[in-house]
Image (tube, rainbow over all chains, first blue to last red; front, side, top):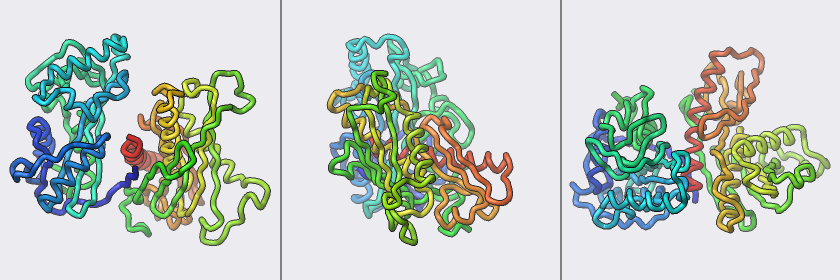
Length: 222
Length: 237
């Protein structure tokens, strides 16, 4: 594996989001909404969804972003994300969505994690530490990529605690320093105020903050 | 304007390439711009005599520069029969930095030696060595873990290092040789992924520097190290 910090910036005002996942697109729209950047999704352009054959977040993020960038001939942004549970050696990790099965049954996915934690005897909060990872990849049609990592530490609670929007494992993830799960927070509370003010940021807000600072045109932040 | 035309808070292009050695349990070729350092991590099933029977392992480092890593050929230290004071000081810094993030008890009674050899020097060789040495070390630990020699809690955090300095009155990040040789102040920062400080080395050349200037350097270092740790995570993950 070779990793290089890239220094390219997007020079247009339009960004292709290489995702077909509605929850993910909604979060990216929320996080990038205040910027003067038009988002268009892979679904709107009728681009196919490439198989995610990688074994790391980086590999999968690159597969998705490069597929969209080369097919559409423009800069594309992908997000590969997941939940890494410490007591489960980082599982489900890159296979986070797979644990929900083909019909994306998140209740099943959360129950599976709980069963695995039970098997290894992880009952106390300190044995139930987990982190959410968001790995953003920006890809250019010539094959160049740049990656941005966002992480949020927390613990897993059971039973799931839902709220206004239940997305993925949010109802069982309680971020460090909080008394509520991501599932019980609205978007502002989950992602925090990302432009400068300190706040309890989500993993995706953190990766987006790095992406915008490093690769968006100068002066695009509100 | 910096000689490299970089922004004051901009790192040089940084590359971490792991798995570059056929023989070593862990390895990384690290490049901070034109500074290139080869780091290998070697495992030995024994510890130094003063640690024997203590149930603890050890992580140590050695540092050296190849003769033509510099503008003029440098005499090999082997030819002089001993290491220079500078090499000794740097290798101790690398060893301390890596040990700061290793649980030596969880490692067990064995030693990992991280060798850092400078192929090409253009400023910041010690900070590149620490940053790349961590990748070699973590690859070595992954090698051990795949063989059930250790559990997964040996590494407590990431560690990386960067230099900052005051160049023509402006605090700047990641000095290259052109800046390093003329900077009024230069400082090396070693920090963990969680932001903990492992070591700070700071020196003024000529005029002393103020606490405010130090705080500016510290803030630059924090930003640079956060980027390096992200890159380490991408490389190791």
